[in-house]
Length: 178
Image 1 (cartoon, rainbow, N blue to C red):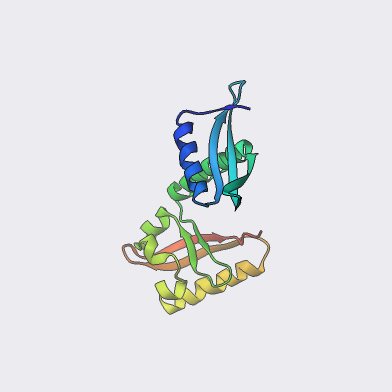
Image 2 (tube, helix red, strand yellow):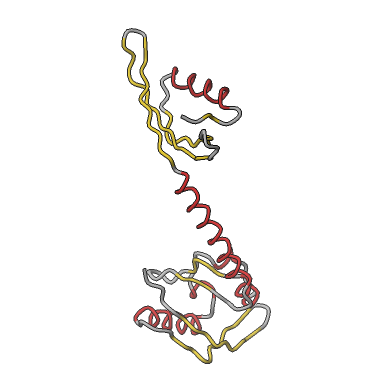
């Protein structure tokens, strides 16, 4: 058995009082220090069993989630790095939902090109943003991309922007599959 970190006694007393009131405690995380000095994160779940002769009984389960938390933290760091790369790369990057072709992600370079804020793009489709002829062209290319297994290379794609007027883009589209 390990010792609990500083402040444990006050937390333990508060937990005991909550359990005396009949409250079950689900998935609480605690950090403990083992006798060998190793710190572990444990998840504790308790259930108060009905009183028997004025005494309540508690059933508790505890599992070590240290490795899970480490992996979760690494994934979060990796996600933040990837988000930073996508957001700061000087090329337009966007992601659309395959079901309704609505924008679900749009990076800063794309916002700057179009002169449209992210909040005005996300959840909308091309027909909400662009002139009908361009929106039809973009949507047709999106559908072609979704039907293919490779990269769709569009060497010249005209686009009307709010701040820069008409631009001619070289666009590459790829369907991401699970």
